[in-house]
Length: 77
Image (cartoon, rainbow, N blue to C red; front, side):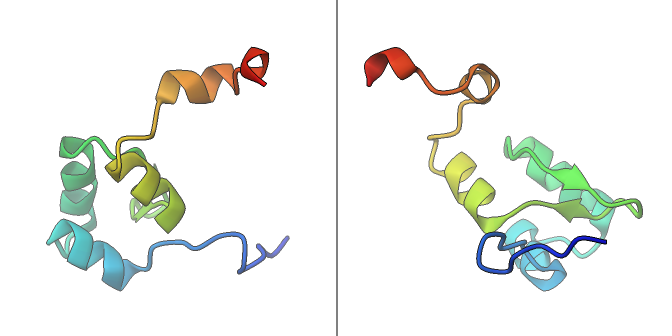
């Protein structure tokens, strides 16, 4: 199994997820994230997972899922 570089990925811990969502039950955490428009993945046990960087990017409104699919606009360089 390949280990992730801890400097590059900062996953939100289970404890922090409880504080962010106000929920202790993983199903309710996922629902809270969905209601707030936060995209995330889930583990095989249903726990929501995302990085602090992804959370902050989405929360600040600079997240654009269409642009993520299209990639950067290189003509603007």
